[in-house]
Length: 159
Image (cartoon, rainbow, N blue to C red; front, top):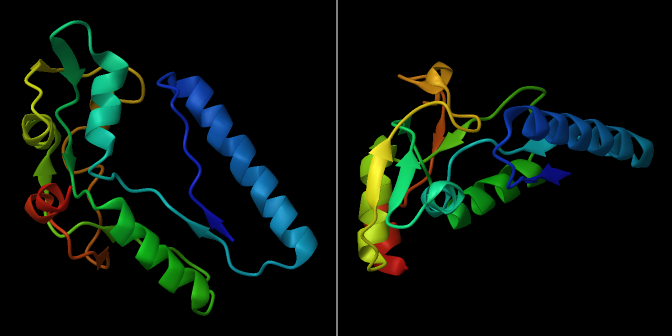
């Protein structure tokens, strides 16, 4: 079973309740039908930048958290998830991330510029799930990460 659920909610409590409920229900349903291998996704995609801007944009300004992330193309993550799901259960966690660290504000600016959009991006913490507890290297993968191949430049060129 592959769980790639997401929510558009930026309310931390609401999002937490959503993911807790969905995961609990999927795990229970999987056990009932004999699923022995659950694959969960939790990484940032390049597409995430435009989602955040959509949540926070007011006129020509958008608030963007100054995160450090190692984002990946959604299609690369899908391929990795398929490989993991088809393989033997790991009885552990496999972390998957993109090939390069990105400053989220800079990445967002580059993506929007490529789309012909030029809003003012204001780096800030404290909205939705983006508090200072997500600062620094908190969202970066550990050394055992499975790394995808498409970097931001290649992704932008393909878009």
